[in-house]
Length: 305
Image (cartoon, rainbow, N blue to C red; front, side):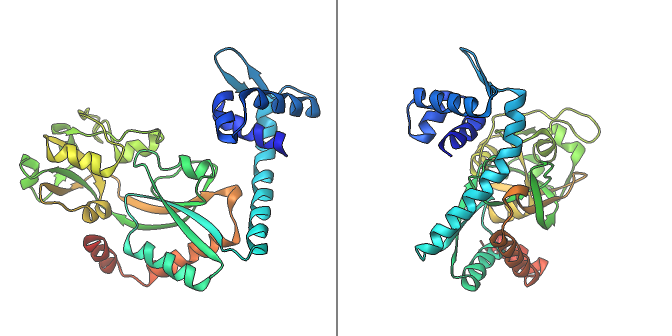
């Protein structure tokens, strides 16, 4: 099992040093465990050079077959261990931007209805919505759609709203009631930094207008607050969904609706091979909380925080 665990970590890091750090062992021990597993399997699993580590074709096939089974086994062992020690089973939930009132209500209801479950929340970088859930660092995540990752399932979609443009109150656009997507070519957008996939960036950090006109950029932000700080102190703009905009109201920034951009929506996602009864029950709790909150109530809860 230690050899398998080492191989799984190495397949994520593709670096012997970082694998050793994560496993709290020496780099030479990582090499020994990997070699031992290769001898046990009877084929090379990784290709090593002085500059890089990569999986062999056989290693990639082995990983694809092994990872879901290992994670399921680890989950069963951990949940059983928690039950044996009479401890609550933790569910780690990531979120982008903010935990809105309806989501907080769902967490509270879920923990009340399932006393043996405990929800831990973690904020996700604005420009990296999927890495933590894909790597198993969180069990589920509330993220901005779209999601096209084949390893993820979208269990719930909610809060579909218009996109807005955040600009300084002194910006000419700040005096308008609305702008069009083509107007974005007249303002420098603060790009969202991070490893978010291109299809996601096309919606939330576009480089061109729908008509194909290039949108200039300036600076860069990994969080909403970083972006808004740049907007307030310059002539830049930042695309945010209406929910995030309403939650982050401030006196030096105006949020102007943008016509012509795809609507924004939130989704509750998790790994296909990580689905568990607790995750399903949590999704049902979120859906129940949302169904008990009208759209106007949801927006008001966002506005008031």
